[in-house]
Length: 382
Ligand SMILES: NC(=O)c1ccc[n+]([C@@H]2O[C@H](COP(=O)([O-])OP(=O)(O)OC[C@H]3O[C@@H](n4cnc5c(N)ncnc54)[C@H](OP(=O)(O)O)[C@@H]3O)[C@@H](O)[C@H]2O)c1
Image 1 (spheres, rainbow, N blue to C red):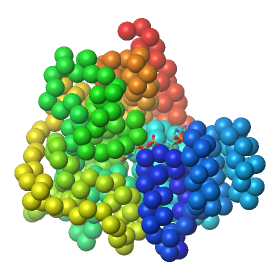
Image 2: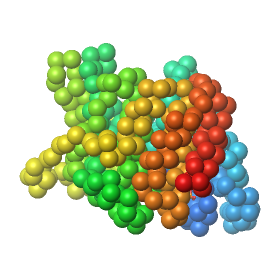
Image 3: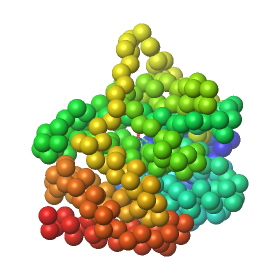
């Protein structure tokens, strides 16, 4: 029986993780759950999965949950989430938080020696060097949950990593593939939230529509697989059947395929090295028909190019890009910024960023705060 802690249990990845646990009660149980604001859903999850501990951001919500579930230890705030992340009683911590809120809990979970299944890509986007250094020092591997990285991880099994020539990440291209910059300028949040293949949280869905998400995945791949950016390629594959590929020195290319369903990569990380059986529809290649591939348009979708630029610049550039993106996606969702404002302001923030050490948690959090301030200022004055 594996006892799971799920950080961000009320989100898209968190709820799908709980579905896997619900379907496999002999092998998995819930040790702890955390969420941001969704007290009602957290209460339903506590009632069903009976964790030992839980945490929610607001103290008032924590107090209400303590009254309803006196047998469960309910913590509050980011400190409560951090304490749960670093509790060694769990066999695995699955980090499904969104944004930079995931970085510090991953750091503390690793410090405590906990095995991590990582969906929160911002952990590696902002703190890749720091976190991978800690993972190596503690000898704790980080198991990827993101579908592309899970695909790469699966394509590496049984092969010599030293013989990898390049990683090829696939991208659906998002809902606006093929549009011109002029057309993009008028796109609304409702249109951007309609992802063609995946159902995800709002932040990652908007990031998919700008290709920022693919840029973040390039950064994640750089750190997870210790691969320089020039050996990471992105290819647009609108059907999302091939989840990513690895090319070896002999030009053999390994690919991982499947219907787009996050439960496969989530359960691969949970069960690694074993696979967890499920009842989902098998991949029907004949029904899928022709698979298409094209080069990403990095001129129009600037965010992907900016991600490569930030990665090459090093230091805290990636953390600054992420922070500005969190501000801009929030503003776009609230109707306070246009679609192309996102990339325009991110570019300005990168130009103005004063980098610090990407190996130092304080410097990363400082860069995050500064880039947020700058993005908000640029947004106000545009
Ligand atoms: N969804 C996908 O299919 C997918 C695929 C690949 C990778 N990812 C990555 O996985 C991560 C999670 O994505 P998601 O789509 O599941 O996000 P989501 O649906 O927005 O869920 C985020 C979770 O984090 C909690 N949360 C948000 N802000 C928080 C804060 N400041 N402090 C503590 N908890 C906070 C939310 O709680 P409340 O809702 O209760 O406020 C929720 O439980 C992201 O890094 C994303 O890029 C997602």
